[in-house]
Length: 152
Image (tube, rainbow, N blue to C red; front, top):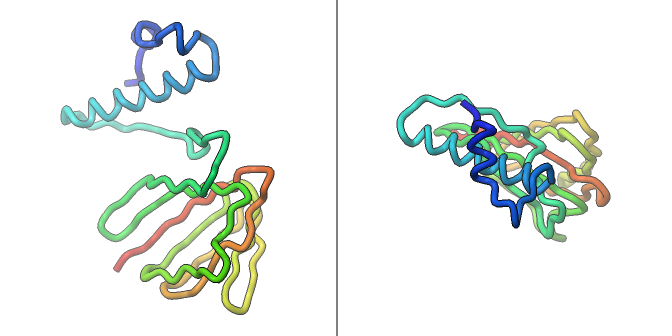
């Protein structure tokens, strides 16, 4: 059950979050997530929904990694890049298979002998121990990735 408007209005502090502002909406989103967690901790089964494009900061000094789901054999994470790339001469060489899709934006993914330009909707499977790096991401828009890691 989402947080009620009555409770939301009581919980909003007018000096720092005037009603009908972006800050107030962020505050409400945060409060709703706190209430979902609180109900789940109390032992109630809660089905909640969150948008993959929500809670992305306006400025990103470094890539943003958010774990969305982690279980024994799989991890799903959202990665947000904005002009970021893997540092020079650094390669990812992961012990697990990975599948990634670009949900928004553009990127160049480099392998040792190949480069792939990824646009919105493009996806790629990266087998375990395949050396790869992010060579480039669009500097003017957020590049939002969904990455799924498969563990043995």
